[in-house]
Amino acid sequence: MDSTEQPPSYCWTSSNSPAPLYSESPDSSERVLQTGSCVAGPSSVPTAQKFVYKSDSLEVRLHPPRWGSTLPAYGLSGTVEGVLTFRKSCSHVLEVSVSLRGILTTSASQHASIAVPGVSKVALLNKKSILFSAPAGSTALMSGEHPFSLQFPHYIDRRMEELPPSYTVYQPGVSTEIAYQLRVDVVRKGLRRHEKLTVPILYLPKSRPQQPPLEHIPWSSRVDGANDERVCSISLSPSWPSRCDANSQRTEDLPTVSLTMPKSKCFASGDTIPLSLKIQSPQSPALAKLLSYNAHLSLVKRQKTWISLGRQVSVREHLLSRADVYLADDSQEGTAYLRMELQAGEAGRECSWRVEGFVVVEHVICLVILPPEHVRNLPTYRCEVPVTLTTDQYGSLQSELLALSGVPFPALGLSDPARHLRAHSSV
Image (cartoon, rainbow, N blue to C red; front, top):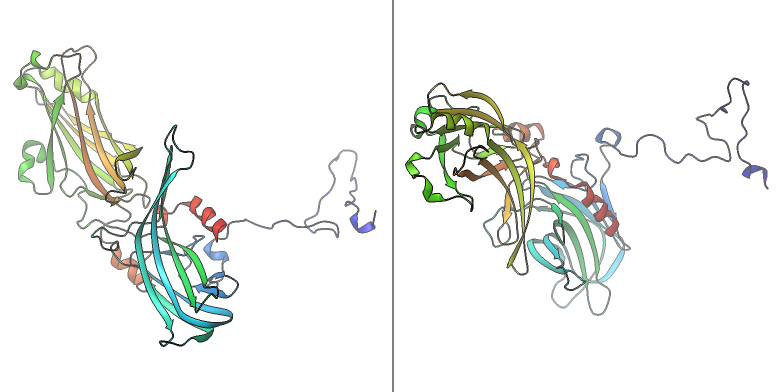
């Protein structure tokens, strides 16, 4: 064996110290696999570093601000700027173009059906910018650098719905992905190979409420909430289990339940949603207090995907939070008044949006009031109130644009780390 291939030698310091000594400096036969952390944060990346993507003939350099994401990320109506470079001359060129594309892909496999899942694709965005077009009847030899700039639109192509963020969700038998990419096409004359280069990018638009938040439900609303324009009251209808006789009690004898909440029904993620619950039971005063113990209020994130050409809907639900009761008033006989707070998920990580007929991400406040176990022939009260969650708080847009010289900051909390791995493996 060659001397350079011998393992490193170790010496013993003493009989009381059986472990060999190690050094941070590698020997000639040792190799350093890695030093420091494998994740490079913004501070460890030079400001001049750009996202560079190459093919045999083309090179694309994107230079968005580095937000710490693995892929280039853009905020609401962000602009994709960069430079296209021909690594070698391209002859017989008819056209050079750069396009922004957004595709919604749904894959569904049905039990005891085909082994290969059915895949449907819907184009959400196709915005093209022509960098060069040869005169009619002629071609050109292309080389050098060509700068480009493309801005994300606010709405989906030919629809009035806002352009959704980059998105991935997996459900049993169903997967949905919204992916954006920058594509370079070099069209050449005849049977010559057309050159193209596809660059995966992230579109992560921020959203904000249109009105300032209501920090708490006014105390006066428990008496007459209809006169306060900032709140709305929702009456809950009783529902009877199949084993109970709905005609056994008169409707006027049943307790009445109402939920009061901010009228806008739009909240920033991470904020506190104020709510109040009023239960009235004049005929059975003790029942109001008993029902207040069985009130369950929660915030649910519901993701819907339409499959089989819209004939079926796959639904996935995730519990974001449960309400905490921080004040209860039962001083008035036959009336229980509860004031509650509900956390609107994690700050910056929730956003309600939809592509109608294909995929919807919605948020719902669910209220369930169960009858006491020892009371028979009493209904259950249920209601669901759709609400809108935004990534950021009201009034934060102007200060953010001023701080970043007009560049929209992406909602990095909506980013899916697993997408980065898939995107890099396909490029």
